[in-house]
Figure 1 (cartoon, rainbow, N blue to C red):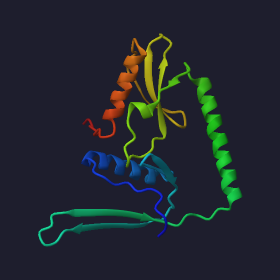
Figure 2: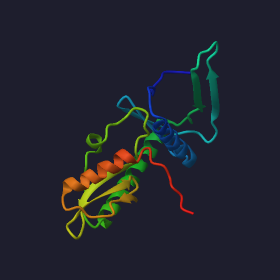
Figure 3: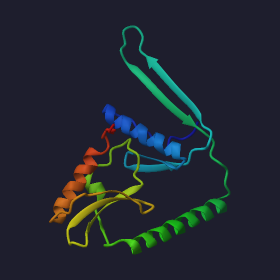
Figure 4: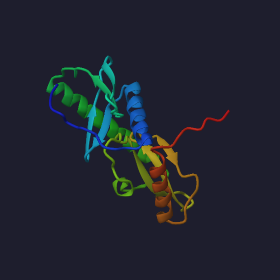
Length: 188
């Protein structure tokens, strides 16, 4: 095929693998750029509408109990002239900047970003986040955290105010640790 730009391998829990595959499937389903993190590197690829898909299951022979499942997706990148790609990139950056500016103006309190990389280690094989955690003071002067998508939508927020910033960050780190493998409980 070509040069390997990112390879993710190593032992993971079944839950971690499922979480990574779910995130990959959701990004493919939405038709957005698929972002992967491995060995401290992040790459993004935009999948085509039609993909070559291969699923292969191999089982050991002669008493070998090893089972291997390989999933491959393959497509051809659309050909763009460099000037078209640069213009599209410039327009996207300008649009995101405008969105962030309008969101910041509508925000009740200016949040302080927390260094998420220090709070939760970046495991190889995870999907790069399209969101960031913020810690801020609300109008009642209580500390809160929220998870904000890059488009400005608030995905999640602490349900309570904390008396100290440290406690707000502690609550936020707890969510970060527990969310990747969280299951969904559907009420009747």
